[in-house]
Image (cartoon, rainbow, N blue to C red):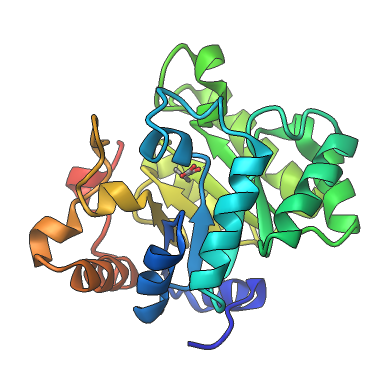
Length: 264
Ligand code: KIV
């Protein structure tokens, strides 16, 4: 597999070529994903829930994220590797720079931040200092206590308009990728069309440029809960490598997510 960069993702968007992404937290699974040519890996702070057994992502630290980034990079030298900045590690632009450096030194190619227009200055500061940024909008799990639970975002018109506005503002500030989580498919399609940069969806319908799944959901081994929009590809194929290949193929062919796995 050749080294994947943000330029590949930009080209794929222009060509209308869809791509898969999956979370990874250790070298063995990262190697398995790379063996199937998975182009993008995300070291998600979901590790707080799927690895540490916490009820949300808030306890995850920057040291946790750097540790798992190093492990994933060791297993997958060629994927575009994106790492979440955990809760309160980017509360100010200066803090964001200091903590993003730890993740980039650990092997990340890009950092992901949860939030809207309030992050414009931070995104500008990071990108001007050579840290590529992915903006995460919609259901941003670090805000679970503000949302009062894990709820679909952007159903109301005002909220939907704000999300589109935020996405454009973050793109203008220098963000090179956007993740939309748990938003109605029509809104995700509108934002994807409005942006020049690639948009990856999770619970955001089939019209985004790429899709991402938490690996434990893709293998159907999440401890407590399987989101409606996720699919157990291991149950369908009976083999881990084939499950990964099937997920990638279904995303590339626009078969996943289907109606059953889409939020209307
Ligand atoms: O932490 C994570 O795994 C994520 C994905 C759900 C997008 O942010």
